[in-house]
View 1 (tube, one colour):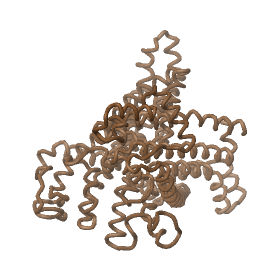
View 2 (cartoon, one colour):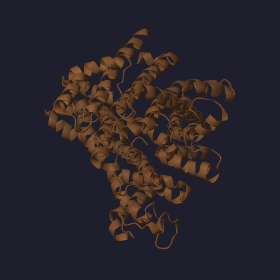
View 3 (tube, chains in turn red, green):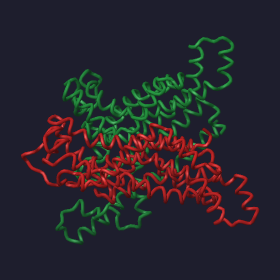
View 4 (cartoon, chains in turn orange, blue):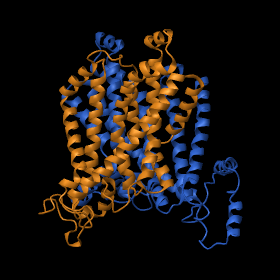
Length: 300
Length: 315
């Protein structure tokens, strides 16, 4: 999907490293973020969505699994069913709220896991250099030879449907790009003067990594990872849409979109709702990531 | 230049080998015994053992990989569990259909992406720039399977202008009106991501080229807008083409969701069916062919870029 664009965008950030903890750096980041209207708006939407799905149990008007054949495919605005009902007569609003839990979990977990693994491998490769670098980076190249969606479908297709398998396959897809970014930032930092002077003053490898390298590479890696969340949401829901992620009767946006698909002739507006949730989440994550990148980019 | 081409081609060989290794391993990460999928459940164990021997599944994995690779090199991708036909017979038709769709989508995405990005870059900071940045941002955030459903609702259900399913009679084979009408919705749906990415790249390139000294010189010499535009286009083209070439590869592999929405008879639908029938040979063959296509395309894009812009090979 658009993972390659995210990769390119990520590589653009990493060409230079942030200066080490200049007093007021984070205050500056905060000030720039605060001024950025788009980022603030998208961040607020995300926060509202997160709260809504976290408290789905308290807000949701109905039971997400309890349907009634009498109330099948009601339009938006039906009394008691503000967003209509699905093909089994279950309340859409309730299912969208509960579905958000799984969709967010499926979208965010792979990126979080991939960030930890990819950053460890990438920083190791970048800092160690030499053979180790070559070994790790050539492994990464192999996974770059697959289009990302295809790789995710291939792995979870072979493993079979299920939440765990979907997360596993997406994690494998996102590790290589994180490694590339982490390696590239670390290589940049490794050759800077303050690392050289730390080494000259007798600091060991572990200490240099911890004190000089990590604080300067984690920011760009984190920003890059946030840009992957939008893609991950779309691909994760896509796997469920294909029947590879979550399985019925669980509520998940991609799966809901799939099971509602035959109803596009009857209730088109209801059927597009889960897709709209996926789009809104992905869009907001992308915008917030762009905002973070701009705010943390000291050159601007 | 020749050294660069050789180096790049040689570099593709280990990649292609590793990619086939990953595809080979797909069968082995799949839960369950591959034999169990092809024999009836009450088969006597000695028959199962015989079949296992027949298929070479009792050999060590590296030997199995070698045997499998040898077969693949000869064009034998195995036999479908579901249909009993050779994998290649269904796959070749599906590849053709997917390629037609991906080419159409790339073309649309490339043209509109260049237009959007070029205008945005030329009028940097204007409302056109902000608008096209918005379109590009939406383009990469929209789940294309959802966009496809939306387009079906508007153009097929509500307006009844375009067909919502399939590729027309006998698949994507003709250029008549019926086939062209069938390809519009899936191709437009699929073109959204490459359009957004092309627009972003072209915008960045145009801004970079416009900031270079030779443009100032050309303007200083009194060259008209169109002349300057020509120079900018010439300098932007190699990168834009490279992005588009890669996008074609991503579309070939990433069209599975959109193909499912439109029941397009391509590799996506084939994969989808293979997944549901747990037809691992078809899954494996399709993934292998698509990723090899992607590897080859990457290689061709790099070579084409080096030919168009000699600076690339000297890096």
